[in-house]
Image 1 (cartoon, rainbow, N blue to C red):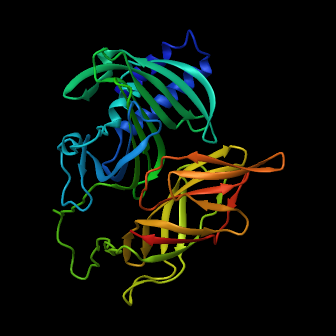
Image 2: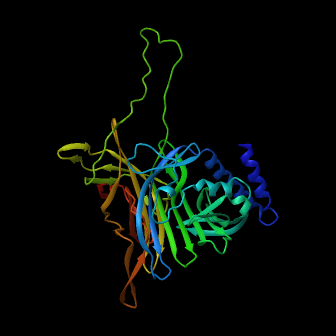
Length: 423
């Protein structure tokens, strides 16, 4: 641990002449927290949903080219991937397996280590900002090409690029909320004129504990001919990736002694698609106190059956988290709320939950569901109702719902009802 902390403190100290001591201390603590996350990152796997967006040089608007869904695993310091349902993960780069369109390598640890661990980033405080409803501290940085390690590949050519960008940390906890990094100085004859990656982080339950993991990543590439390509990736259903075996070399237990029993692994229940799952919220969501990453609980409100066979009983526990909480005001005040449910548990049983939200109702607030890439809002100006259309490029992620909740503040109380359909 000493090897990690020393370069962090030295790097922070280089800013002491330009920055107030409070900012230097905040920077050192932010870097130390992120370094601990990176050096103690558990092996885990997540479901990745990538929406690939393209816009030609002569096109006036972007279009969704396609959507990829795959599993990504962080194992022993490496990133592996697999198609859904595959028997094992592969170490072949995903970039070599997807033949059409543009796909980026998801090695987010490379960027984070370059900024928070290696000590080669020149960092300067950029001010306080509101980041999606949270008070955040922003720092700007530059990394020279010799220390960047960011290799850009396009049309068979590769180049190592210098980089610059910003990162935001929660003003209270100093957890990193967002890392934004972009290329700095690509060759004039290179097929790309610019590339940028924005990674949003959130506390994620991966079993018995919580860990700071990437939640959303946006890779944007500006083509030399004026075109543009973007990949928006959402990460859900994150789990620890591990196995355990116990071997005892001690003496055999004495006669009559009570044997120690290993914990019984819950029976895994597989849910077919198309089942209706009625849910009642157990954890209230209050816009004044809730933050992204908060754990959520709900109960199954009615037995879930398939062809007369009960799979999930009423009262089973559904667990998840808040993955988005963003306040907007475009003439009408509202919140964009993302909720993720991924596990169902009842005595002796467990099921992974993949579903789509079909309806949600609450007497005290007005809720709209996100059902596409656009949303129309109505505002009143000078006694005239005016409609405005806002575009939202959000990937369709199983088990994740996006709600538009009207008002300057809201509270979804315990008992709020939702209807999901399994996928």
